[in-house]
Each structure stands twice: as C-alpha cells, then as structure tokens.
Image (tube, rainbow, N blue to C red; front, side):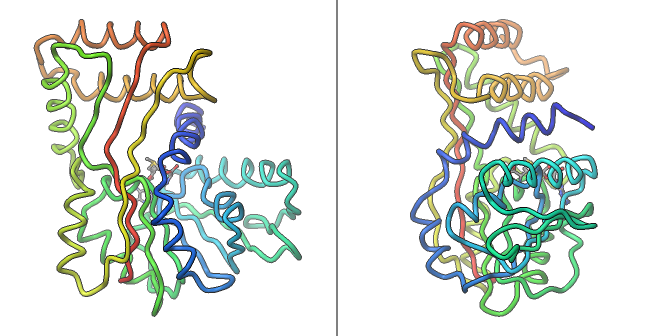
Length: 281
Ligand SMILES: C[S@@+](CC[C@H](N)C(=O)[O-])C[C@H]1O[C@@H](n2cnc3c(N)ncnc32)[C@H](O)[C@@H]1O
C-alpha cells in the first residue's frame, strides 16, 4: 500500500471542501433525482460517499472506479469505518458495504480504468480532480457511455493551469511555467483542462449546466495549517520538485529550499486555479 498517496488524498479533503463551488453544488442537488445511481471515475479514497450523504443524497448505488488497486482496498475499509464513526449504519458485504437508513446505499469500489467504462445508465457520474489526467476526448466518450438519459456529469476540482506560491520569489514565473510544461509533456495530460473543457462543452452535443471557480487556497493560520494541510503542501512541493528535475530552470534550488523553509515556518501560502463543472451529456 502506498500510504503516501492515500495520505495525500485524505489531506486534500479539507482543501477540496473549502474550494467546492456552492452554486454548482446547488444546481447539481436541484437536478438530481431521488436515490440516484452514482458512478465515480478515479474514486481515490472514496471521499465522495460521505460528501453525498452529508449533502442529503442517498444514492441507490455507488460504484467507485479507481485504477490503483491499493486505493480501492483503502477506500473500502477506511470509508466504512469513517461512516460508522460518523454515526451512519454500515454493514460490510463481500464486495463493499451498505450504508444509510435501511442500509439503502450499496457502495462498491472496483479496480479498473474509468475511461474504459462499459455502457451504463448512471444518474450521476462524478470525476473529481481527474479530467486533467486523461485525454479529454476519451473522457467525454466515457462520460457519454456511463451517464444515462437525463443523467449528469459532475467534475469538481478540475485543474486549470494556475499554480501560485507566496511570498513572492524572483523565480516564481519561471518555475510555474516549467512545472506546467512538464505536466503538458506527459501523455494525455493538460494543465489547462478547465478552460479547454469549457471550449469542448460549448461545442459538444450535451449542455454545460453550471461552472464555478474552485481554487485551492491553503494558507497558514496563527496556529499553523488546518488539519493535515502542511503534509498536503509538502506533497505539492515534491510534485513541483519532481517536475523540475533535470529541466535546468534558473533559481530552482533557491526556490525549493525557500519554499520548504517557509512551509516549516508556517509562512507558505498556495493557490491552484480550478473549476467545478456540471454537464449533461
Ligand atoms: C488526483 S487523484 C483524485 C482522486 C479523487 N478523485 C479525489 O479527488 O480525492 C487522481 C486519481 O485518479 C486515479 N486514476 C488515474 N487514471 C485513472 C484511470 N484511467 N481510471 C481510474 N482511475 C484513474 C489515480 O490512481 C488517482 O487516485
């Protein structure tokens, strides 16, 4: 089990919860039928399940597709315990668990490639922090297949190519450009996915129902960073360091050591530009 990956995704939760656009969420909740069937692409540690329950949505079924089999095991075990601790009735099953009043919500996590999903009839497909990792055409085709008639696709926390660290450093612009260039060079990756999906949805046969900004903003308080957000920021700095490795960007060494020191001193702020999108394929 790659505990670092699971811890990163769990640390990301409080950042995501602050960032989610409330108007897009409300539009989603207004349009969802009672007891919707839900499929999630790239479910990670399964955080969408408690979120939907907190929003008052009791799906008839939830299937989270995640390519990392270790995360699938983690999500299944951890979310069942987590929901039990939050007071929801939870019953384990062979393939997942049931949760909610009368154990109405059948929750399963499966290992696989979400973009290879078969034809389905979901009322809702969720893909959080995922669209920038895969080819957009492939993703839209998968959404078309998975979402049923009158169904919805909700894509919160969709990265759009803004990465800011504060306080100012003279190498900031070079580092940000090199970081995004490095992402763009990886197959299927697009650091400007948010704006490019806006273009795609404008010309697609479906309808873009709502869009809102969901920038991550992580900042220190008087008593440090909330929850596990210091760890989250340390991961972000590692991602940037890995991306810059071998790229010979002037000032990288000083930039990284300054940022790590600012993090240790509780003085580092980070912003990532993102959108939440609600689409009817
Ligand atoms: C940034 S994480 C987001 C996880 C989760 N949606 C969240 O927001 O906490 C991206 C996830 O996508 C998964 N992933 C990447 N490509 C995938 C694919 N083709 N099918 C399923 N999962 C995929 C990765 O294993 C990782 O867990």
